[in-house]
Length: 170
Image 1 (cartoon, helix red, strand yellow):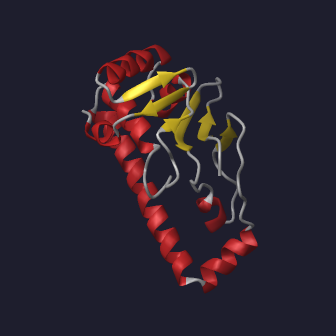
Image 2 (cartoon, rainbow, N blue to C red; image 1 turned 180 degrees about the horizontal axis):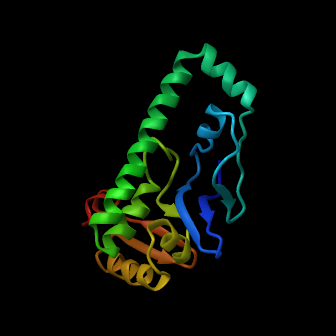
């Protein structure tokens, strides 16, 4: 509902690998509700965050009885799959600044995060974890994006001035 969640895992040697962030209005954990097993990743609130939890029993009841809920879940899962496929593609094909740009843009996905306003409360280290580049490389990329008029930076946040420009950046 408000705040920011990191969906991540931590390697045995302490390295954080961030899979995605969850901006306000986003949904996470549906996979853990669909299959009876423990979550295989961590969900971390990195700043004051308010979440709404849907009990497994209620989730199951909605899946069994609500066609609109099933349509929502199918659409959501399809969008999430598309997001992760794009992440692999960008990771393999784009240079670091474009990866940073696409990583930030992914947090403004209109279906997965419908309530995200232009301000994203995320720091350089988190962006680096999200796209797999160093914090110093993120800083260089953010300088380039700010010079291009696509973002405005502040301490621990980014204001995206041109979402379409960010989405097209390569």
